[in-house]
Length: 343
Image (tube, rainbow, N blue to C red; front, side, top):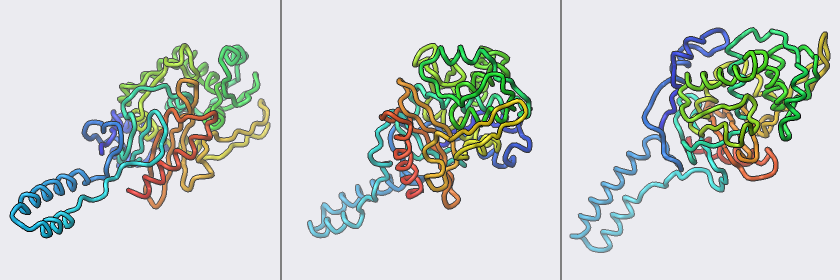
């Protein structure tokens, strides 16, 4: 197992405020470790040492039994039988995945850990981070008329149903961004916080660089397949790092942990009701976040986190086959169940 560092622990400290966890946790999240684990399954801590010890013992036993009777040799072999190997969750059909201890960043299991793939609307995690870091979440932003042309230019974008001319706070727009995965909210925020979409995308990539996400690139602010299906990409390893960092912001964690959010009509805006697209929230015990994503090239993707008995696991599945994002729920459930039963 390896620990994925939050490269730039100094970034954690630089952003420290009442929206962040204690400094001790910041440093823990930023802890560095060895090289990334290879794709495939990983055994629990200490299992490699135990396996090596077993191999040496078995080898010594085989040498010794050359001078013993066959029956004695069989008894010795049985005495030193190798322990069961932890191979990872069964029946997982995805193109990329990882599961980690959220507190330490240690990878517990993975598939294609460092393989770059499109990630769909998981992109909106970085969109939210850029806005949160800019601050002033009570800032009022008017939904621009240009959002209509933008949505019309995309192929079936998910929206929050925002109405042109409505004035919403940045915090309310984050709800619209992260729960129903609103591309209209992403566009509105990018225009306001860039200012302009190009400047905003540049800020996303600059933040990725600060976090050490060397296998991640953003060409858009919402995860839609533009300019092409493969213009935006990341890896399971990088997404685990991004997710751990995002969930360290209480305002982010509080939004993605909700099953839904209701905004009554008020001065300057209509009423809205947004439901979380994450199939685990309100269904899987202890689920706390974080974001769905899907495009033709990305397939069905889910970045997820859950806590049980004091252990928090964070994971991602990319390219789950199926026609609806809900197919990621059973797959993530198997991954989490395996993790909680083995660690």
